[in-house]
Length: 362
Ligand SMILES: NC(=O)C1=CN([C@@H]2O[C@H](COP(=O)(O)OP(=O)(O)OC[C@H]3O[C@@H](n4cnc5c(N)ncnc54)[C@H](O)[C@@H]3O)[C@@H](O)[C@H]2O)C=CC1
Ligand SMILES: O=C(O)C(=O)Cc1ccc(O)cc1
Image (tube, rainbow, N blue to C red; front, top):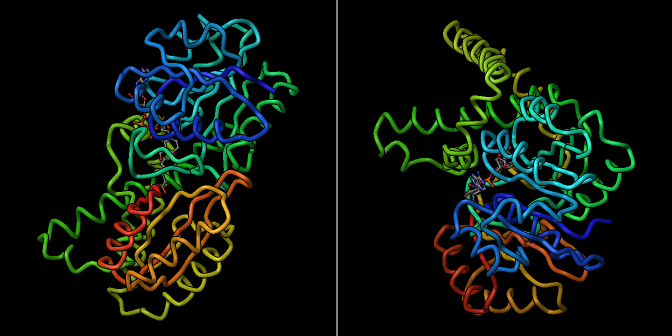
């Protein structure tokens, strides 16, 4: 197994990968971080995501066995060259970019004694930066890998073992297929979420103030920052246009059905969606829910949950639902607690924070 890891871009994804590797009980990784934003680097060091920080990319890379590129995609395309020029023979360079074909094409140009394995953890958040990093972010998530042709199978296998430590399930995919699928299940939904909020919002802010759980569930990712998405949209243009065209055709068909009073024709649409939706492997991410969720990161210590639930009970709060989202034996996990109202969820946050746990909402 590798020991020396470097993270270039210590933001949400870079920070989460670093934190999850540092939590591994059976390994003692030395993680070096580099980021163009010194605040991000300082914070990553302060929270223990990285062991060393450096303002020199050469320094960050020269002794590393694995280098993770965790920046926006456009930067990844440049960093592939900078990093490979400083990397010693045998180093694995990997990225986390949401688009894969352009990245793998760029990686074809680097010297052949370093190995590029494209990666895309299919989990994330609408929030950015190291302050939102979560060691359990990838637990049970799909993590796509696209190795370059020159990477020996043994190296791919060793790398898979490393990524498995994040708790993710690995899938090897052709970059083009990855981009088409990501276009439909991630990039199209992102644009739809933005347009839904803007369409309703353009009618007046009072429209949005009436929105219920369904609208909020469907549009959480509309709060994502454009900086990451600019590159995703640009570099997956073709596949996104294909997905948009399909979706626009579907919307037009629905419009025609309604206009011509063929409402019953929607039954098969609903039935089909119900069936397909139920086939998505059960992970709670994105599950429709009208409750108000609070997420708590806890250590794997006896009594932690009863301490929290007792304090909430004494505070007059009723937990409507509870789920252990991500757990690492002996280390800890993230719990989702759901409350019946936003007011209760806010009160719960106060109570749990007072107990000294890290709490966040989505
Ligand atoms: N946000 C999400 O939910 C997911 C994002 N991704 C991909 O992960 C990558 C990173 O996204 P996030 O972590 O969300 O963004 P982020 O904004 O939280 O972190 C990016 C970090 O990279 C740093 N950075 C930018 N240019 C740099 C450069 N040239 N050299 C060194 N550091 C640089 C920034 O200062 C920042 O700290 C993107 O390519 C995105 O497509 C993949 C899966 C999920
Ligand atoms: O917040 C969520 O649920 C996401 O799905 C975030 C996300 C954004 C970009 C990706 O490439 C993958 C995941």
